[in-house]
Length: 380
Image 1: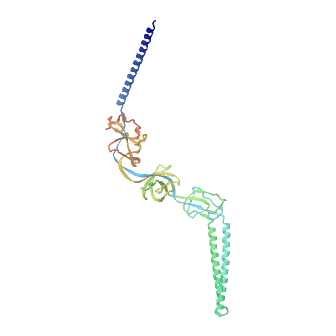
Image 2 (image 1 turned 90 degrees about the vertical axis):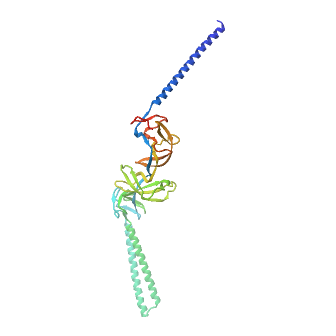
Image 3 (image 1 turned 45 degrees about the vertical axis):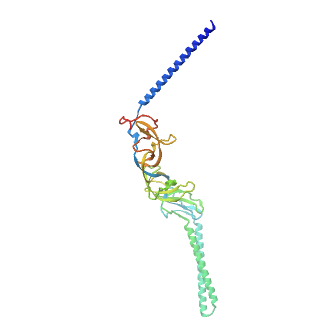
């Protein structure tokens, strides 16, 4: 076969292959275009049904502004019983949870040395009293002799000086006796307040040093919350403002009132401590964690629930319904407050009458068609 005929056959074959590939590509493009059109038509025809509770119509709303509080409960009255003298601890019978009365004897320190000091000081006081009596008689005798002219005035002055010295020594001995009695009384440890024992720190038989803590007592009839406030929040807090606290482990909300505000900020954190007295303390314990909200005033504005604001984009936004379509509206957050125990926030530039999707709807793509399930009509 001639060479040119071979080339002709190979060219015809390549042309046939090229035509086949071109036809396949065109068919695939047509198929993809048809699928895209079908998907677009399906999306256009698909309408997401929404319940009436999923959509919120914005309006000017009054919100109660406040400050979030948290902290541990503390007893207003508490006391630590300390050893006022060193010695062996005896007779400590109270334990954690026991009730005590103010002035009740709860323990004592071994008083052997205290009794000895009282006896010693008492004997010294009696000896000084005897010296006063001797000096007094000497002075009286010298006075009589001076009056009769038997001795000079100088001897009388000497006897008067001796009497004054004896009196001073006697007073010093009486003061030493008072100190010894005070030391003996300090061996008895008594409860300074009425309350319950919170901790017992030593045991009977231990030798305790001066100022050793023996027990701690708290009065649970009055409790307060010590809350640290941010500097900006502290400016709005005033004595007498009311709050509701949720106590750890308790189902009820406990009312509280601001009774004191620390005049100085804390070093480092710059926080300001506020103290809230609980209006009822039955069944509560010192150290329980409490949190709540202190109401400071009211504010008005176009607001939405804080949960409706989405933050999965660089700027916060709301999902709005306009002309039956989902629209993502970027917003600026303003003042925050509460409406029926739910956190709300003022938003701009939102106008009254907009339809906002609540958090329960979830994230929807912008342009999604929606309709209210109750009426089947698209929101306007």
